[in-house]
Length: 91
Image (cartoon, one colour):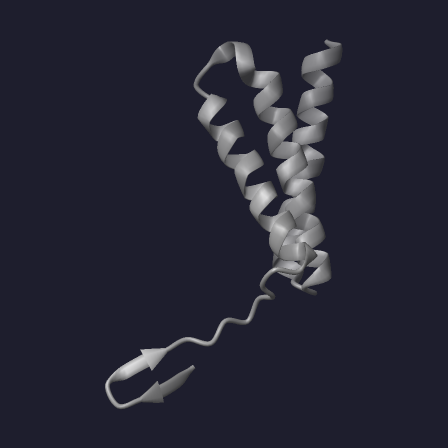
């Protein structure tokens, strides 16, 4: 963080316009679309599938950024979501 007078600016730490920048925004769109469809019972499989894809993509971003918290939460989420999707499709 740099400071000049009364104005504080925050220096960004994440890359901009590299592969991870695009992946994180596409993943975010996947997750938001999934959440938008969550209230429609007929779209539950699509919700879980899009959420799984978004979580895998965010897990990739966490791996590339060496961010253990992002990796942990998103790989765990992707695993649980994928297991739920398999249960829905095959039971």
